[in-house]
Length: 453
Image 1 (tube, helix red, strand yellow):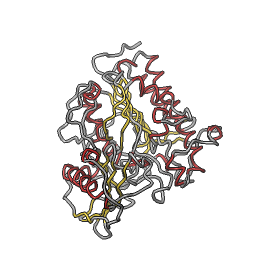
Image 2 (tube, rainbow, N blue to C red; image 1 turned 60 degrees about the vertical axis):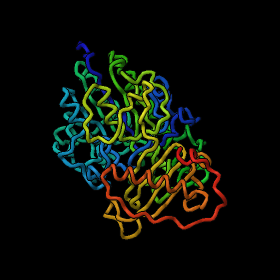
Image 3 (cartoon, helix red, strand yellow; image 1 turned 90 degrees about the vertical axis):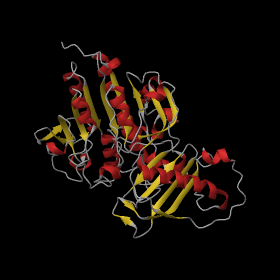
């Protein structure tokens, strides 16, 4: 039997697709869907206020692999592939002597359904994946491609099939430091049918589901889709438990960083004609928790955290140099109580359902949208118009858009400057922003510190 190495931590990224943050118990969901995630969050480090930096599949994945914003990488929509010269997490870990593996949905080769050729695999050495898994597989028909580009059908429900492959990878690499990225399609919808296929019998467990307040108010397709969606989340959490059990049984649990997160959320066709691509928390707020060396007993972080902070966090946790062009920050100092200089907001680039930008603080959400004719494809725009302003303290479910109200002109001004700073930092040319038409709403009663919060 091989002896596990203990000098450098292993890393597993357990990555889901389109999972709302409030599917988890630690975020108040009462359906008991995620006991394993909840335990990981409570015993490890939980980023309570975590957000994606791009609520679209491919751009979010490009950000997570490179640590750079979608516009910087050139991946601004679901058809723009990751450049073959882009430096990814796999490259950084491989250079440090790690075995690297990718299992599941890749979606960084545009919308191609063909096997991903080696130059387009982002530097991962071991490979069992499909570029667009939703088009090459179904819930009980899990087909991916191996390292030789051959189609491989794995037995079982799709989540279980991928989990089996992940455990086999871990077993093979007990003696190596390894970096494994396990990317699930669930709880993303099955595109061909526009439904959420849970394991047999699981949808029936949630026929009377708990509805988050935004879905109670706005409906969308949630009444039809939540039972299946919740069933998929439940099976993902069971898969997480299996991975954690495998690590424990092999004596690797104390020397493996496990990061659980997703690419974006799901608003069930309440904010536009599909499921994401909006500035609302239902699209951009995500679950994020880590455990293992550096993160055990890290506590609940209240700071604003972005998906773009994950790459530097994983490198830092393994003692690897964080490249200077990565835009995020490592979470490790926060676990030690070192909060000085941490940003008070997160920046979001939006594309495909219109080009937009948003900034969110603990209290405020502000977004802009490209005016007709001003956008450069899905990349950016020369001119935007103010689109949304939400007071998340008074209106946590974003049901009352107060952009343009006289009482909040100063808030909008402060948030606009925050957003422009982020856009400049991301290398975007500063655009013109048309102010929203005035809406009389009485006198402002906000104190200066409330505007800044």
